[in-house]
Length: 415
Ligand SMILES: *Cc1c(COP(=O)(O)O)cnc(C)c1O
Image (cartoon, rainbow, N blue to C red):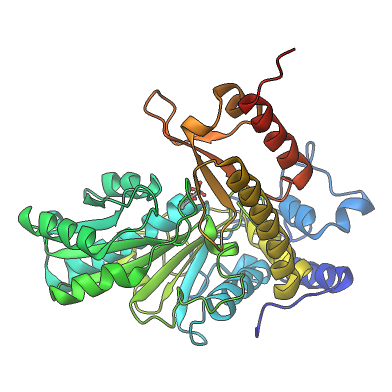
């Protein structure tokens, strides 16, 4: 890891304070032109020493705007200090975690995974239209039926169709036959250009798609495609295991990745991360955005620089090794739960390197699902699954209670 390093509290605070000094300071300098200021002074004071020692909260109050994209061309000068911190976060992700070559990526911290996924699909749709003069109805999204709803949402916004690839009900895998079937169905509807979204951890099952199952079939048919990885949920879990993760930029077919910091990383909401290879993001340039310095290449406009600082502080507090340890503990708890369920003869799905356990609904009494707030696949009678997500706060103690209740339901006490 070249960029992602563990720092001590003093180093982290110094780095962020320096970044804030490099920004325009709304409480001191004369800034007449920006429709921006620090957070309202009556509500958010930064007088207490306590706050000044909290790097994320002091950034929050200073209120830097990270509008635009800071890996490409110039950016709004006023916030160059904290923008540099965002660039560091993106390097930790793109170069260190997902193995892209130095300076060969663009990206930004988006309001969430939904926007990061929409950004990817928007880029590829426009690329196909510009490069090949394709009509919008000749482009299709290819992704499994377990794919997050942000994909159909993006399809709707961008006027694209989604060809849903069925998955195996037990393994949640997409098979080569299923992919071929979906490709044929799409071709039959006049589709010629494919935007593939492969999951690195689906929301309901944590299942991880093998991107090659999609790309091998598309290559077999000699069809043009782009491949995006949705690691919104799994990006901070799946790559941290005792195996060689292949789902990264060493695969030349992968051109973009979404990873959310506001799920497993426990950053505040508003911290989706989008990274893509160089030469792509220009496809969504809005040339009319003239008052903002630099080029407008993102779906959202204004966004808080405090979000970038929050992700940076979390990543440097742990460092890659400590993060690996944290995820290992969570995976061990997941193993523990699976072992108990095996002993009870309960049917469930679990992707080996993930921390989601999805249980067949007929194995869980409804009152227990309610008591433990298990999330159903659908909120109606057709529901077949409940999931347990092993987040940081879910400890063996809680799981033990759940298992105990499961046992009591199976063998009700005659008293
Ligand atoms: C949560 C999630 C998203 C959407 O992320 P938001 O941050 O809620 O917008 C997209 N894909 C997957 C797989 C997710 O789990």
